[in-house]
Image (cartoon, rainbow, N blue to C red; front, top):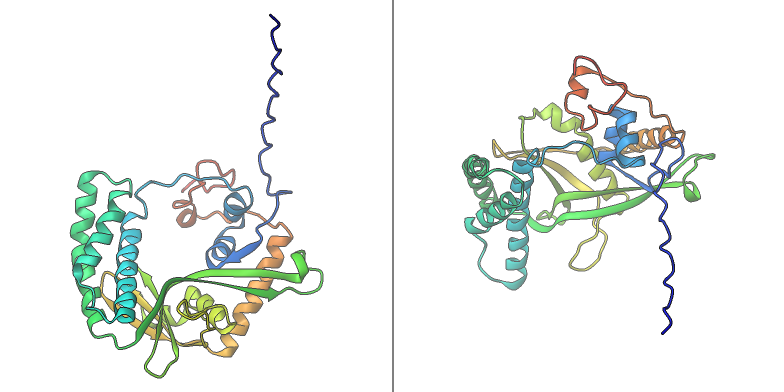
Length: 291
């Protein structure tokens, strides 16, 4: 009997670690990535170029994520109910979605219970606001992507960069205009904060450039007539707008930042208040000693 010789296993080469000096740059940018770069280019390089996982506590964002998921589930239920002509959803939708998200958050049982107790008034205030809302919800977590032209010499393909994002909530006002709402947990915001909020500006820019479409029919939504920031803990909704001049300034700033990214300018910007919350603080060679 002859024995068939099996081929020797071929050793798989271990991929070389990514280097922000020569690794492929992201094919698109978002409000989050651009904000990260402006705060600390080295942190951007770690996260978006080298794609290091970073050190993040499993429950660090658990409460905010659970509240967002509860709001999302409720608004989705409202959209379905209105499309079907059925009864409006109740508080059970909010609570069930919150509980599901907390159950998979990585929190200990006592931490989950604390979060549920903390969320009680938050969900009640949201439900109260929804009861008085006259606008029709169109979508939640609605994604957009728009191409932004780069000046001659830009390294992005075809001289553009894809700017993307997800809007927490999009409504249609009584007059047919588009309303955008972003949900926040944490500290209170003043009207001045809302008027200057960069994330709302990013959403307004994406909408004005035709990036948002109605999921029901695929039609492009008109530019946002107003933008809202909803603070979950207080249950307050503050409205603002953005002018054409503000959107043009946003685009110019975006192009400038992308230019620095394409030039691979990834110098650190250490500061105690910034480094303290950075997920790369233990491995960063530039971390501030006070962090």
